[in-house]
Image (cartoon, rainbow, N blue to C red; front, side):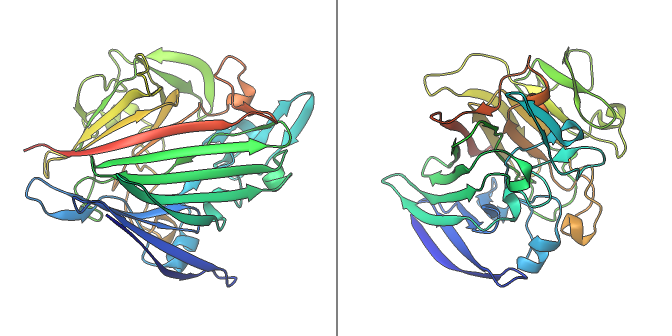
Amino acid sequence: MSVTKSSFGQTSDGQQVDKFVCTNANGLSMELITYGAIMTRFMAPDREGKFANVNLSCPDMPGYEACGSYFGATVGRYCNRIAFGKFELDGATYRLAINNNEHHLHGGLVGFNRKIWNAEAVETVSAVGVKFTLVSPDNDESYPGTLTATATYLLDNENRLSMEFTATTDKATVVNLTNHNYWNLAGEGSGTILGHELKLACPTYLAVDAGLIPTGEQIPVGGTPFDFTDFHAIGERIEAVGGDPIGYDHCYVIGGDAGADGMRLAATVHDPATGREMEIRTTQPGIQFYSGNFLDGTPGSGGFAQHNAFCLETQHYPDSPNHPEFPSTVLRPGETYRQATVHTFKVRK
């Protein structure tokens, strides 16, 4: 196993960006940069033992600064959407940036995905990785409280990619952190993911309005094109989902009981063409399934076309600050936010 550090270049305003390459004993590797605590590449083998990058990436810093699709980023202070960029907490009303039609998305205009994080290499007996740390000051993107966040990415010799996010605050605030990798198990640039087979351990999903804001209703997936309780190709029923552009962009409610590690199985994805398979377990209550609907081939999409990748973002539900019936995303002084997700990579012969 190894961790190596090098330069990834500079931001347009002259800030240095470092790159870490972490490789396990089986040859799987991940690359991460300090800009956005972004995972730029994840190399995994197919059934023939051939390695490919299965995570959409940009070639350099100008590419990442031009890309508005959150490729590989650690997203915060609040991932997903907050309706009309507004919420109330302890009697005070907070107004956030409107950056997704009428709503707030993924932390605002300069979210955690556009910050330079501090980073240190992590090497244990069985894993290698990087621990990122970011201090988000009070009123950053209009969120209350000085928030200290960490994002730790580890790759072990069981071919498990572990992501752990923590946060503490000096004032009551809301927090919802996730990783925004865009996966294509056939390899980056290999075309659409519509033939990938997906299984979600999720009996219900959150109904949304035209702005993709939850209505508060949980809908059983049975008998709908949202039912992935058994394996289905992502493209099998995508036209029936509708939307503009067409595709999945919905938060699923994870079912089942947690194991001793506090995690539940959330998703399994298999690419029949290469045999690559990815299993996701998490402590989070929800998982956002996004089928790359808004990718359009422009620099803002890293040059990738619609449905060239999918995202499975483990998280608390969108717009939770405005839905008291949802699991709370409020963090108070003296508490520690802590959530973990593990992706296990396998090959079907």
